[in-house]
Image 1 (spheres, rainbow, N blue to C red):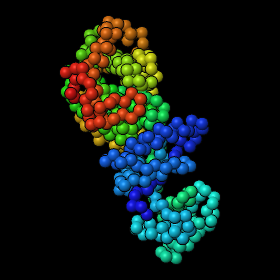
Image 2 (image 1 turned 180 degrees about the vertical axis):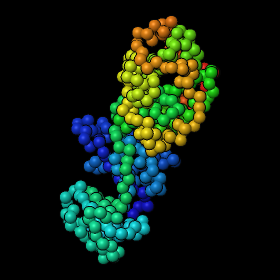
Image 3 (image 1 turned 90 degrees about the vertical axis):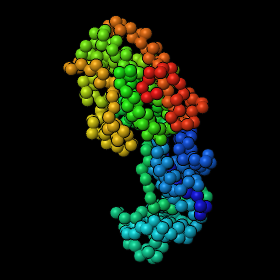
Image 4 (image 1 turned 90 degrees about the horizontal axis):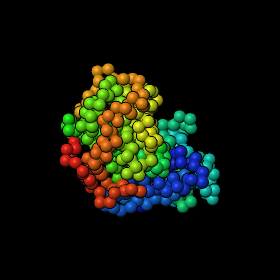
Length: 416
């Protein structure tokens, strides 16, 4: 026993990768180190084994576990006790561990070897440990439905003994699939869409459109709170805030009529497309769910999508509202979404929004509104908030403090 906490992180989907596996592991290792490093800057010790990362840290075990469970790309998080490679040491450690954890009941021992030079087979080791537990604690064995499961894993230099396993985030390591820009509102959907995009290996930047100068800063505060919550999954997140209220007025004045909602969604997407190229993002992400509201009919989704040249990813397209809210609760964004705010989407909303629109009709409205000039004007008014240091390409230097405002091109942006 070294006095350090020890946790095993086990791969999920990453084990299926072939010759590209090394690239995915590189992203995973970097993300693990960032997430579990100590506040004083001391790095965690990480050892790679067959499909397993072994973490050793001076952090308390519970804190190390909580941090490790936020790492996307890990399927199982398993606290463990490392012991010498002898059957008696393993059996003694198992008895000591279940006593320390206050466990009792019917039990089973599951043993496996990553190396075959151990003196006992997996079955013999499990029987040896089980016999010691049965004799010293008097517990009955139940291999089918145990109340306590003792996990023994033989490694090259030591043996790991565990009695707990926790589900990890799963998915692919953040950054392994590239970079995306998420159109973030204050509601339930888009933060969940961002999380699902991260689970597919995308590092996400965020853009939030406010109704300023016709609405207050409440929606910006909610967007910032959402990004802070999501940042634990990737670190170094960046939030762009863009006031769009005046531009929405111009679209209404250009005759958008019942298609006003679709028109301003096209403007947001077009602006996000331009911003994404500046950020080095290769795709856009939205929280659209097919048929959930009038602007999300198949016709309107197709009309909106034609305003962007970048790929438009919709991770929640086939999810219903109950599924989205349940996921928001799990990742910690649901309470934020319930807070009141002034959403820019509610500005100038027609009493009967169009459910069927065409690209040609909206393009004519945009020409009258001068959208080609609006997009650079909106980008010039954007404000950038950085949460910590982004680790990877296009990271912004000098943004170590959470919530640092890096750039501000406008004085009237909500949330400034």
